[in-house]
Length: 96
Image 1 (tube, rainbow, N blue to C red):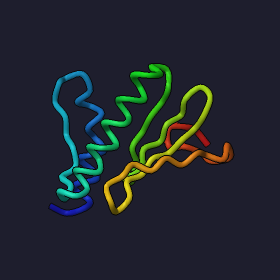
Image 2: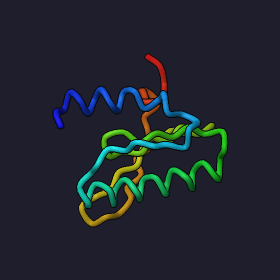
Image 3: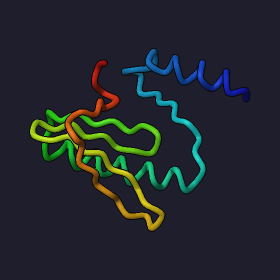
């Protein structure tokens, strides 16, 4: 499949919302494992603060809670690393 086709398909997945059908990018096993860890952390954060916003972009989990902004990555040892935001950063779920 061409990259252009992939982007076109992924760009139309919003039309499947509410149908119970999901389309995810096929990732290499290591990236899948990292994404799974970030997704698990995202669920934990949302459980403790249901009003918080989270998003996963480019191997990084962004968390915007009421009191703080944090991003998480996975290091080479498979450990979750938390990085506090400086307050000036724009997170992916925010506008310009």
